[in-house]
Image 1 (cartoon, helix red, strand yellow):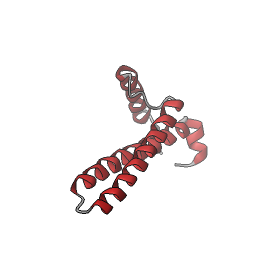
Image 2 (cartoon, helix red, strand yellow; image 1 turned 120 degrees about the vertical axis):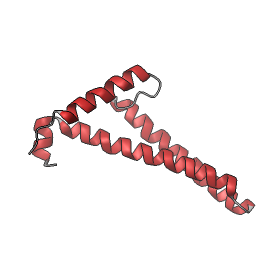
Image 3 (cartoon, helix red, strand yellow; image 1 turned 45 degrees about the vertical axis):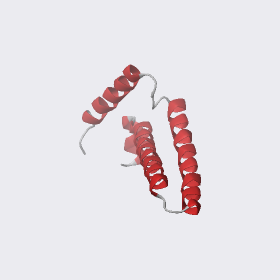
Length: 99
């Protein structure tokens, strides 16, 4: 989207939020994949390496989620607030002018 239009419609912050949420979802997927790989590893060396990667993936997930909480984009411990935020984002997306 054009940066000028993003600013005029208020979509610049929402775009950042969407990108960050996609990154968080990818980080969660990475954590799950590394955890599964650790349990399937065949040698102690591979298991140790995958465990290090798992810890790094967990750290990345924590950094992303903390950033989103700081920005007010993620309310993992308050489902009502998260649902309200999600509904607001849905309404914003539905009310975007078509170009």
